[in-house]
Length: 305
Image (tube, rainbow, N blue to C red):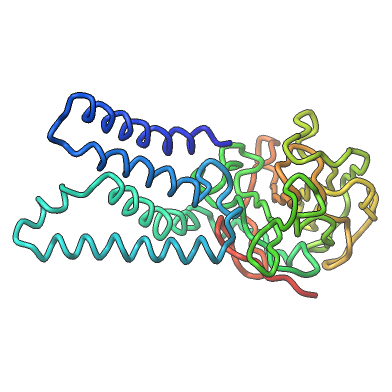
């Protein structure tokens, strides 16, 4: 669970609940039910959007629809306040939950999509899809720590985490503790470009949900090097599924392996990153342009061969 999500969610909710209980105990003229109800609303909002866990768990379409509805509700409240003569005074009278909805709407509608601007397109490596089929959700990706928890690590800066969605727009159907319940599990991973296999690790176990191998964070993986010297890492592959070997030349679309849950992984997914060697000899992350698009968190990739 993400600490920032917990603090941002539980903090305001606990403050409101505490204020409501204090008002009730002191018999304050301030209605304690207002504070308590807002605390419950914030907690419900957090649970619904999975702030303490990846948002895609809810399902892409349900989440997107709800964001739009909340944004419309917040905008309606703002316009109603502006229409009245007191204007700013009414705006300042927003309840805490009103502000939560407004800020959340701005973040989801403006800030998060805007992080794509922070990814230098001139450095992007053009790739095909790393999948043979399916609809894939970008769970992590973008030019900001807000949408990509890899961003702070220079080699992983613009990396992408893909989870597969089923027909209901969810990454999992069935018991969450079973790897087979996840749509991504066992999906075919193909080479997104021509290149040479620099490394292929296939011996690490797939981890149970809730466990991870922090000693081998990439898990089973394949590293490709393009003719331009750019290296691609495809990680968290299924044990025993890699069908290429070190030194082998591969073509775009050639089968490499299957999606697994090896390494430091929360659920079956594919991690992919592109790196170029800097003048000082270190490897730095560069953006990936997949099927002509520079992707960030919240977007979909539809693959078919």
